[in-house]
Image 1 (cartoon, rainbow, N blue to C red):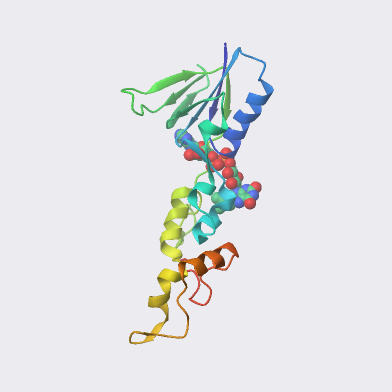
Image 2 (image 1 turned 120 degrees about the vertical axis):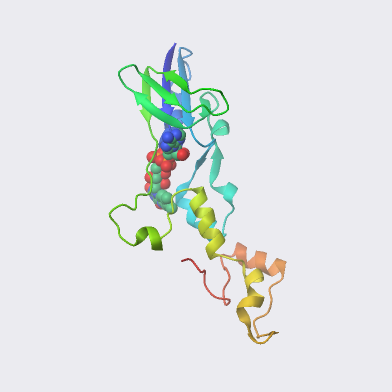
Length: 191
Ligand SMILES: Cc1cc2nc3c(=O)[nH]c(=O)nc-3n(C[C@H](O)[C@H](O)[C@H](O)COP(=O)(O)OP(=O)(O)OC[C@H]3O[C@@H](n4cnc5c(N)ncnc54)[C@H](O)[C@@H]3O)c2cc1C
């Protein structure tokens, strides 16, 4: 039995596994394994919409095990690759010790990381925007639905609301569906 090990479950890793499943559908002498720290793949190009609130978190994630029927998906931290012995070491996870996975073919697709090195001022004044956690952090800082923000943002006379009408839940949903967000009550407050 030949073993193909894929490292990373992002665009590259997940779609490589999907393509291999298709190509090797008639081969039962090949095993496909995928290691990733998450059990889902993220459609990063739509993360800005998660921040703005146009779409929900679950709209940009796809569970790897649902997407890949034949591939053995392991949710583990990849620690090292030993090319000489053709093995990959992965963190212990719930098991008591680290695991060493032998492979015949290896696909390395761990993506990239945000690197602020050599860019003075950026670590203090910018926020990374790469994964789901980053998007959630930005969303929590920057956008509040108009219905929530309205009273605080538009009261200018010691408590009496100005002429901006407070939106009902239905009106908010209607605006949301038509791509109008928080209009008239101040823009998003991204840092
Ligand atoms: C906001 C945003 C918008 C974008 N818009 C576009 C666009 O419009 N068009 C376009 O073409 N591209 C776009 N991109 C870029 C595109 O999303 C990336 O190029 C693509 O996701 C890279 O895929 P990847 O598989 O190489 O890496 P990733 O998708 O980052 O996947 C890597 C995976 O490996 C896992 N991993 C890494 N290291 C380890 C480890 N040690 N142990 C276990 N798991 C590990 C990660 O957790 C991750 O799940 C955008 C990116 C962002 C952030």
